[in-house]
Image 1 (spheres, rainbow, N blue to C red):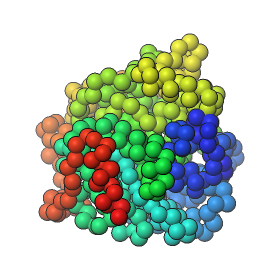
Image 2 (image 1 turned 90 degrees about the horizontal axis):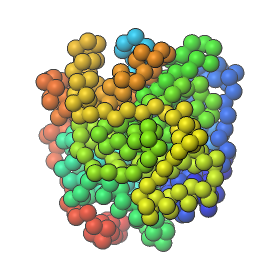
Image 3 (image 1 turned 180 degrees about the horizontal axis):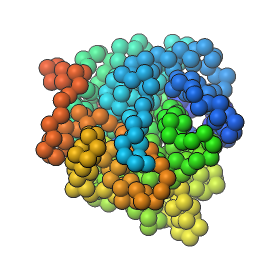
Image 4 (image 1 turned 30 degrees about the vertical axis):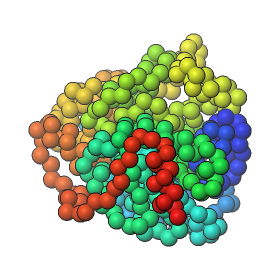
Length: 463
Ligand SMILES: *Cc1c(COP(=O)(O)O)cnc(C)c1O
């Protein structure tokens, strides 16, 4: 399949879009045409395993660029590392509410679902085409850990991850910094996640630097991440919906960079009968303000119990704007240029009404997040992590009495964010792979939030 940039200036195939990450015109890749899944196809997919479903969904996107047998092996290898044979099991928790557990991969957060596959795909492309793979990414904690675990000990790949110094959870930090492989560089940046993301974005926007050093992306600007994540929306739908394939199922999604929720939106564009997407934020609520007031404007950064959602600029939001504005690359370019100058994107009238028919949104306070963790632990015997708790808290406020079934995405295992769980007065037992992290030595390099310092580190590392 052909891919286009949201700014209209680049067209290329699947592997090229995967390798480029951010398009050279500054846009993000989206499929030139969204493949449609018919009701009959949906019915025939219902009994498939996670891996089989992945292959059906990915087929039109990948086209003939990867032989079927190779893709099959990649997919099976990628999900063999998960602790659940279902990969992403669905648990009924309360009347009408189901939790989609996305945390059974190696680093206990949903990022593994896409990054186990992307790690294998990078290794495949590196072997097959002799492409140099220098991965660079910014993380609020989970992407970095998942990406490093996705490519560790894979030949031909080097990975450098920037994380905000002291602003990731202890488990996240240990997961990233306790792998001592020589192909891993952890840069701990004195700043917040947006500073890290900004540096990475600037490096990718420097087209000459990017191509000279074969920079590759693992952030959700990479379309392959989105693609891999659409699979579990279909998977959950089949677990929860009746046989008619018309029942609308809502999804509640704890949102930061808009990647995960965009994957759901794409699934719906493909024909999944999803109902509303509930965009749950924490106190960093730029997206909630956009959905409810039509104004997208960064405000002051707040530290919360759900650090993976502590963002002010949602890099995937541009993909949604592309569809909101009729797949018009010129319009998106204007909007993004305006945003750079004025720091604001506005939607009003019919446009805002469309936004509000696609999404509902709720911003969860720190207090409500902890209350929800305590409440679900007591009433339902289910321990939510603080990100998942934001999604469930939003469900409680917005959907609970509205009828219909809702799937809440559980984006991390609670053991990853014990700081918040302990704050609730709850003592949890850690799964073995997390408990043993504390005994491991760590390695990372602390730098200022300064592009030049990062470049110096990179040049030495890539040598
Ligand atoms: C990354 C992450 C999120 C936010 O996902 P986006 O795709 O950035 O919207 C939510 N919860 C957890 C645990 C995460 O790691």
